[in-house]
Amino acid sequence: MNGQVAAVSRNETYAFSKPVRESVTLLAGLGVEGDVHAGRTIRHQFRMTYEPDLPNLRQVHLMHAELFDELALRGYHVTAGQLGENITTRGVGLLGLPTGTLLRLGEEAVVEVTGLRNPCAKINDFRPGLLAEVFALDSASGDFTFKSGVMGVVRTGGVVRPGDPVVAELPRGPHRALERV
Image (tube, rainbow, N blue to C red; front, side, top):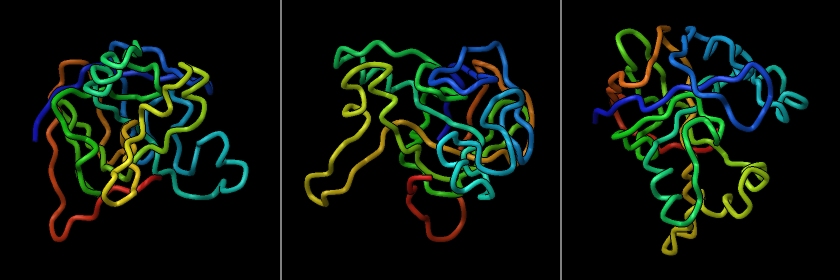
């Protein structure tokens, strides 16, 4: 399953959206250099207050550009970085990957997928009603599907730019479905 990096984003401060950049540098074990969510321990603004020593499984937020296409059909104009992601991809079925998938980005960088992004109510502050659009309810099982991207940790650092290839390497053994992190 191969795709391409559509955009890269980072923000030095806590804000819902992240400005698009020409490139980002991934740092092994930390995340996106210069991004507020980089670090070995959890950097999520709310969760830091009660779980500050947990490992940071949310170093990099990846989102599929196909979500923006879907949202546009429903009347929501959303572009790269606006939902807080660091790396926007195209052509990679991020939501269907198993936990532990390695994503090779560009020439050097490797991100291990740790789980699904749990969308928060701030999405409705950005665009009223948008939160309901990034969930899907499976009528058969009653389970929710979270559509707002995946989270990962940086295993190998490197520079990532729009146009770089994305190659997904599935883990060996039985695959474990992604859960919220």
